[in-house]
Image 1 (cartoon, rainbow, N blue to C red):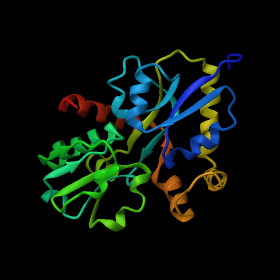
Image 2 (image 1 turned 180 degrees about the vertical axis):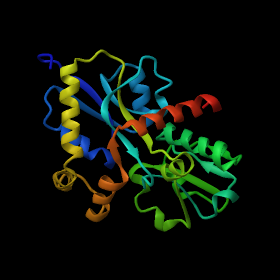
Image 3 (image 1 turned 90 degrees about the horizontal axis):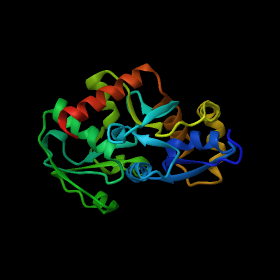
Length: 254
């Protein structure tokens, strides 16, 4: 790593990144800055970060963006933290309140509705979390991240977006990948990937480390979520899925 160089790393502030944070905690020469996904995108475009866990919906909107890691935030089926909640079945809904925190998940839902569910819906923008409490029987709410934990028991219907994507395409879904616009040193990128792998391969140690530092979900749920719901390795099927997702975005003008 370049001597005295401090790389600014942008990362989302959700529970699913804990293995990354655990692996990166001992990596010298990095400054971790956490934000929710849509704000990460705007700050990455403005040049704030050297490397960012970029929502995949922004990959075709950022000039020069390139994926530089073998790790990501993905799901090969149910993800449990990107869901549509409602008290009526999806086919009877009229309005969908969209989560202001993630354009990638919003675009994913619009793809699913248009291409596969064949539904025309009225989309309502939000700017804070009040919409989660104000849903009516003809409406659904799209919620991402830790705010989904505990919501399942409050609604009759829960539609997991990664599970729907897998059902219709046969592919896993990638919500975010490590991206840069700069020519970062190969040595640093190798050290960075090694640090990520340390966390991904040590989920139990990750959970134990953060239990005294954060308010976390119940241990049984958390272990299942990090080990079985989130899929961290960016393999060829996930790369194929990213291409398909970006193609749908372009096709639908999203």
